[in-house]
Image 1: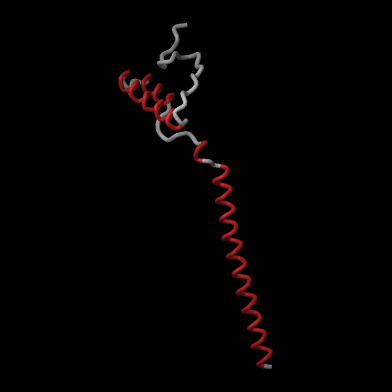
Image 2: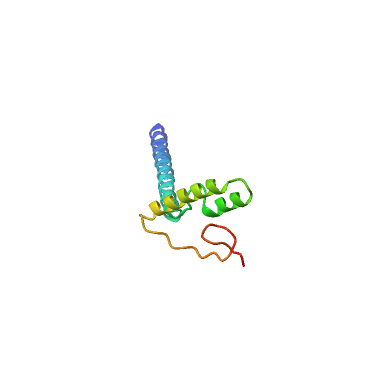
Length: 108
């Protein structure tokens, strides 16, 4: 009887250990797959650059929070950063009928 009980405890312990290892293994595999999928879907290269964009700078200048000199200096920095990110290729012009190339409203 003691031998049968010891064997049953041994088998139960074996299956508990196997079950725990299986749960841990599946958790690690799930984490790795989730991490891979997140990196694939949210490619950092496709996200907008941190910092100001030209629309933000135009809005700040129109609200009077930036002087024209500050705006031009920061605009040049944003454009240079965008050109650097694009590999030095010139950026295509943006067709914005509401403003000219300096961000000022068109006189029409």
